[in-house]
Length: 192
Image (cartoon, rainbow, N blue to C red; front, side, top):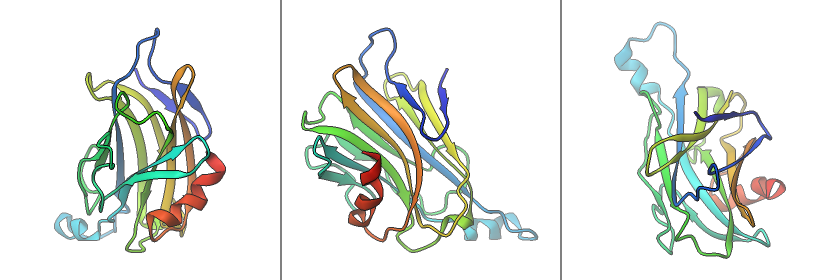
């Protein structure tokens, strides 16, 4: 059973000393439903968020970023599965797969975000979540749900950090304003 995290909560990944090799971070959101619109027209009111994974080293320097315009990290260890432009429908809207075993040792933190580079803000989103799964078994390891209100166009959802004992996930939930991946770095910095 998955651990449901509150903002700021942390969970150690893997159980009973079992090492994780590949994880999938699924991000999902639903746009606000507009009263009086037929279902077909509701589909036109979607919000295009872009999931991203920013990779940092121990000195908190950005090493690489995976997002809708760069679907694979330079070393191939992190892969974005594709862009969902509406957020409609059940389940994860976008996902990022991380091969933890292949991740370069200098990468110590992975930060997962969602942002609207077109400028739509989170007041147009009814609900949002991120969930971390074991990509081999599809078992959900941890979930973090947010109430995404506000005029910000980005959210720093969670971080996954490597330390001497393995990997931990921390729920962040910080709002941000970002029009590029580089704009997200200052919003992430206080959480590294």
